[in-house]
Image 1 (cartoon, rainbow, N blue to C red):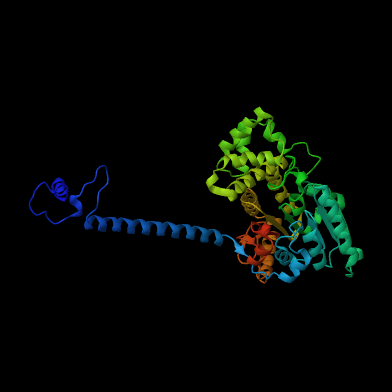
Image 2 (cartoon, rainbow, N blue to C red; image 1 turned 90 degrees about the vertical axis):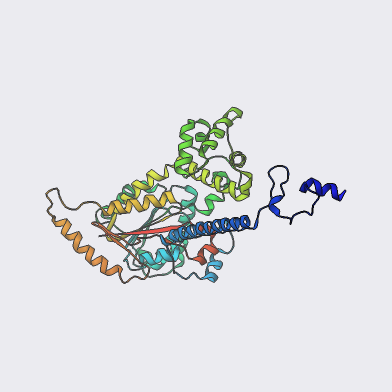
Length: 438
């Protein structure tokens, strides 16, 4: 039997030649490689590994460059105080970048202050405490629940704290959107429109009490109606968009406001759902998203997609981006000379608008068509010199952009410290930008 096998392989009864791997050919495409082939493959694998290593290096450098585009806060957050005030309760509203916001206004004499997004009055309460010279406070919020809560909080602060000018402080709160900032200031006092406000804050983030209220429809993880209105008196709801808007408009909302790559598939599924009664609850929308998301991505995959879809719908329902763009200009015009506007954004679309609006404000011309600088231009130029000398003394200011009408004090946005991100995960996407009027 052994001889038969040997004859089949070597075709001769003589002593078989030395066995070589390349002499053996098995049926099909299988073959054994010579040592030279092995070395060749090793070189190829080494090249692939080097290429893979190079790609990883590029990714790391890309991430590093993204980090360099921001300025992580160096502010020390007192963990003990934080836990004492807010604990581990996710339902509590925690003011983001609070210490950093206080730093922004520390060197400013805040006789008048405007909070465009009152929320639970976390930032406002701290600013009022830090500025006993304050005489006029104005707070706005379009959400009636937040407005009511803020009124109660501000009253308790003023009643409890016995600083000297508490009796002189006039507090005005309005159930209005910050797009109405000029009309509101005119309603409070004429001199606020003519002389301007010393400080303005816009915190564009959603409060925890809004997210945690299932009835508002903002939460991905809680079942509720597809509402998403900041102002309950507004007519348009997320449900209306999903069940009645044209398919291409839904696709545009998902693509532009949610920056969702899978927008076309989601658009078609949403329109198809109308054949079976449409979408009427957040759970129904989440189920649709889960069925549209690759299972290989796991839980985090569909949650990230759902977050982008919910963001897109919320922006569309409340017309947030157009309102923000118009309001930043109105707020800057409402500042007094040397006054500061601080804006906290929470996603790239908002931050892009804030950044561009600040740059547009800086580039406004103060020289007439004949190229001759007028008296107002000369006054602004002198004020810029004074303001620039002042900001150099503030440690939180790293790089500035000096413009014709003022100074951008944050060339790169300030982001929360690592400690704050750990204690308050919802703060991790926050970005603070500040501009000062000449």
